[in-house]
Length: 164
Image 1 (spheres, rainbow, N blue to C red):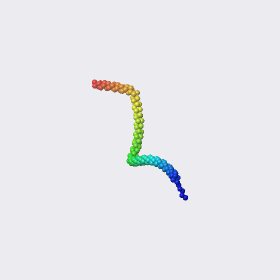
Image 2: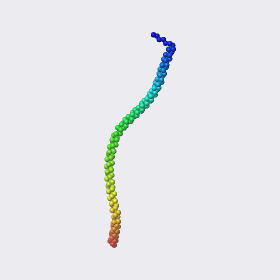
Image 3: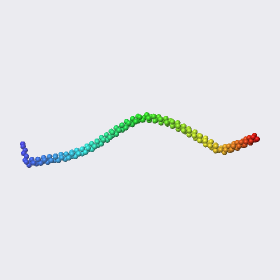
Image 4: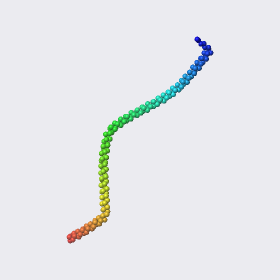
């Protein structure tokens, strides 16, 4: 059974098919625009992430260099410490010896200070006694001088009598 379609029926079907095709084309065109838009967003995100990765790699490289430099410094400091450690121990021994000497010297200075205070006190007592007794000593000195004069006069008079 063959169905015959008339020319006007064919054109209606063709129009209907064309309308469906056109709708499908427009939908695919919209989907394509949306996909291109998402692709653009993804490319932007990928670019940002690539930039972040580069920044992080640069930061890691800088940190690694800094770590290497610090390790070198640490190694050098360990070598220096190894060289300085015996000197430090020697200085520590010297310091301990000097502390002992200083403590002895300090105790000696305290003893000398006590002796000095005693000597000053004795000098002050002597000076005080001397001030209290100076008049007596002067009087005694005068008395001795007077006695000496009397004795000299007596000697002179005896010697002048003996010459005669």
